[in-house]
Length: 157
Image (cartoon, rainbow, N blue to C red; front, side, top):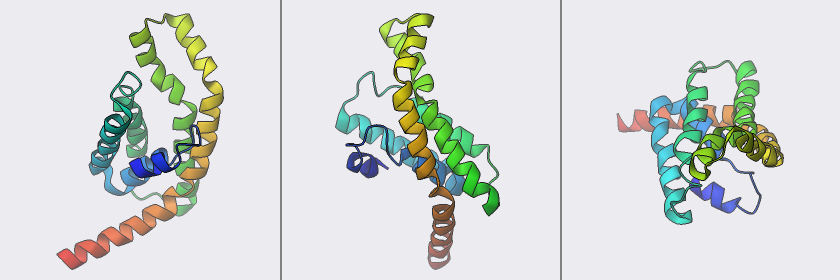
């Protein structure tokens, strides 16, 4: 997750973190929180623990929670649509999710917070669209990851 973000950092708000979050959640459920928070910690460690980082403690958990609400084994015809939509919704709403922390840290009132969200709407649009396309990878990769996980468990067990 962290490596993919660093590789794609030259593209603002275009990354695979949402796709990886949904992918790991649909396959590993609660255990997906481990790589999610390893990513969050590494991002803070490498890029600096500052006020920008604190919302990361909850914004990825929101996406994890959305994915947890989905059926564990979604039929293919639904998964190929629902997974990208969930990724996309998270991207479109990223600024809204981030806004409470911004308001708290910078003393923004309601109007200023709304203005901050509107000012970032273009970035959230790019984020949402790119997350949709990245989300198209969730279903095929989840099938592959399940097969690989089952294969490893059989060899170990």
